[in-house]
Structure formats: C-alpha cells, structure tokens
Image (cartoon, rainbow, N blue to C red; front, side, top):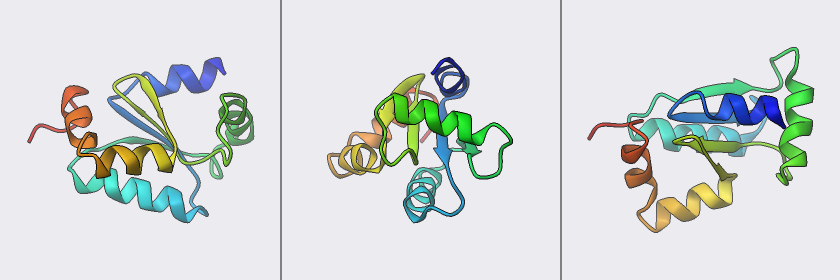
Length: 102
C-alpha cells in the first residue's frame, strides 16, 4: 500500500485508472472539465500496474479503479467522486488542493 499512498500524495489530484474502464474515463473527464490537470496512472499500461492494483484492492477498492486522491487525501472511487460533485463539494475540494484556480 505504500507505493499507491506515496504516489497519491505527490500531486494535487491523482487518479489511478485503466484505459479499458469506462468509469475511469468518466471520472477523468469530470475532473478535467473543471480545469484540473491530474496525474493519471493508467494501471493497464504500467509495468507495475498489477502490483498497484493489488494495493488499491487492499485499501478496500473493488473494483480497483478509478481511485482518486485530492489534496493528498484518498477520496475514493466513482461513487464518492460523483456524490461530492452532486453535493457541490468537489470544486471546493479541488480549489483547496490548488488543483484549480477559478
């Protein structure tokens, strides 16, 4: 879990994703739509992607992607991100993390 947690805390927004996952695409599109430029780790393209996926599952994420960190905090998967968005809390969180400036 150390690798995923360390990577998740290196940038204002980090998304662990897979190119083959439609929910990953949707969450990335949503985050990009606010002007954020997240660090995206495509687990299906990385040599250590399977290890990273195992760590995400060990953190309790099933399915393992997408998983989002904002402001060095593990936010969760698509349900958590969409819930924050619907409640109007996602943009303030991105602002606080200095991921967006508007």
